[in-house]
Image 1: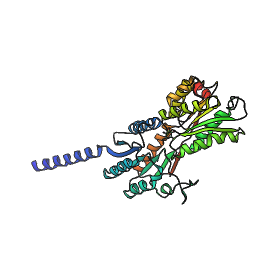
Image 2: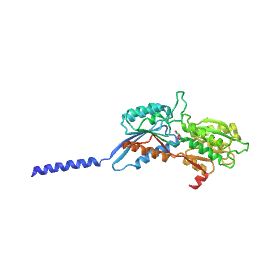
Image 3: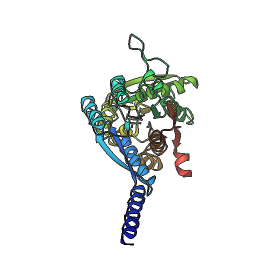
Image 4: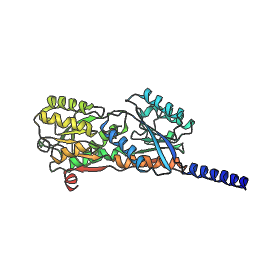
Length: 337
Ligand code: GAL
């Protein structure tokens, strides 16, 4: 009798242990490296990656996120990726410092058999002479567990130009038959900077509007730099400047300060355009201190990136490219919100 009881007890304990083990949550390790924490837009983006992962947690599934600041330094980012590999991350989300280093980084991650979601900075296909090709990038296409989540920067540039073309004077404030503009560019290595620069102006010329570029400078997505470059251009070209195109809102916020300091007034004697739809830029549009911006949907992009990371964790098939649309944001749009 005693023996039967002891066996029964042992069996019960075993069952208990098993059910306890199966109730324990599965924790996935996620490594995220962001090109630079001080970037306004990528700050919204990375915070939403964390929030959204947390919102997907259940009693059974948890996500342990290790987020790293690559400080705009490719060597630093390569180290972070190597650490992620050693730490045995289950998936990596990567916002590259330099897209030209994509091959090297992807090779190491693929060799470690870790799925990879690239975000925000699209690696490009190049020919032997280093020219950008209008083709999808082999490093992504040839790998079943690698993808890119982003937005087509051509669309954002086009929207900027279209907002100017839609103005009553089509951007030609002084009525001399052409739109005289300055361009403040993001990091020239990024396709976002290249396409926004090209397509904003193309939207004007496509609409039959003549343009004149007074100045084209690199502000590296940075607000302080945007302010400095715009202030210089305003002192060099004065009233000749009718439109200030900035490749992002960070630089446009700086430009807005420079415009105010120079005693100019947006909507009256100058127009100012950005991209991202940062809350601060929306406020400026509301007050009439910025002409327009383009929503770079960090919510849509971060959620897509996390959703596809989860698919990869579940061993599901994925696409190689995921695109999120931009949205035109002018005063009418802001007022209607
Ligand atoms: C762009 C964004 C910029 C900057 C850049 C970083 O899409 O508009 O503000 O964040 O990405 O790569």
